[in-house]
Length: 78
Image 1 (spheres, rainbow, N blue to C red):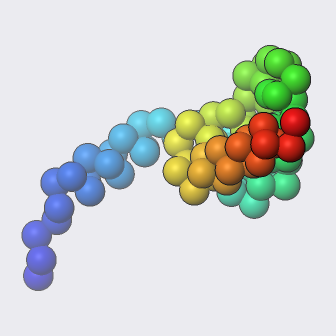
Image 2 (cartoon, rainbow, N blue to C red; image 1 turned 135 degrees about the horizontal axis):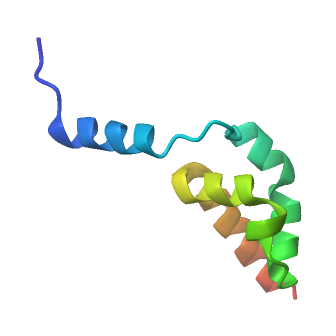
């Protein structure tokens, strides 16, 4: 049996500590990500308007990458 990786255990413990009672899935975030990007680009306070989306982006690297890509695309379209 392979010994647990201490770095992986620490990462999992960190994720558990940051778990909230209400969280969005990646699919739920992806469904509103374009609106989130547009609101942020207009200077809206997305932390007040869509706090669960903002929170998800702070902990999910895949969704954050999608967000960053959409943000760059929008900046290039202006």
